[in-house]
Image (tube, rainbow, N blue to C red; front, side):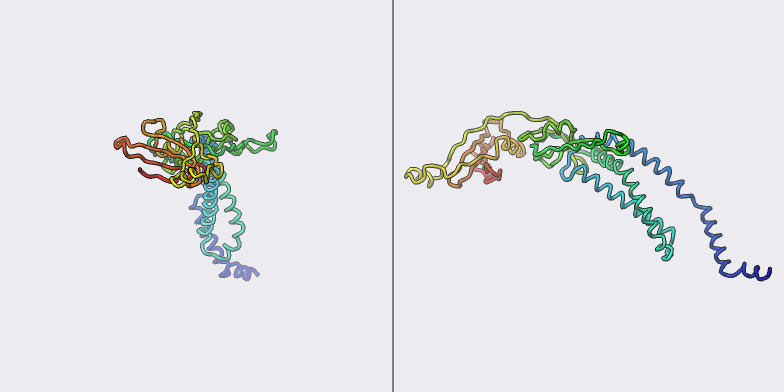
Length: 336
């Protein structure tokens, strides 16, 4: 019996298995355990995540977007980090398991669950760190400071304070949920300016409000805001007049048409003309070279704004700009 047991103990299959176990244990002795790397990395990322809380709010309130918004930026960064975390975990498993298909298929579900965990953790810890890094990189290389005029289209407040009074049901201490406001503007290049909630509430529901913003163009295409100044200047509006072409004047003299067919409303206001002129570099205060009139052109049956800009070098050369009074469309822009 002892001889049979000895022969069974040293079968070729068992020998191969023992050799593989010895080789695997020898390989493990030379490698560092994964948790010894993962734990310090997680601690460092968590500390950076907490450190970036106030920095993210400070950078956001001095940034203007040409396209998109802060929420869309966060969504893109979080998605990319999730893909990197999950893809990195799956690549690590593939390289460790080799090309053993049976072993890989058997552990696919568990490895995908681990990948989801790593992807979610990387997104939660590193999203605000990456966003702050992008804001900082955008502000490192900027153009010269400039002052631009913008018209406020709408204002929105994002109140992200905890909805529950009791801290038992609140996870705000784990999340960077600061409140901020957005001003959607119309003007040169930028469409969204991030401000404090207090400033955004001041402009909610208001119309025809204009801003002078001191900013610089950043390296990543976002504006670095240096100062915001509301414009509250009231400009005198010119009186309406009716102009007819030569044929229309003959008809009026004959009594065929003595009145305008319909009453037009100048939806494009004097404040809009002021912004239009600023964007084109026309100084309306220079009355010696610039004149503005509005009238109803009976031949075209449309309200028009007329901006006459006289050339300072050649006084006989006048640039005439006609703007539709209802749609703001440029009807004519030529010299006469």
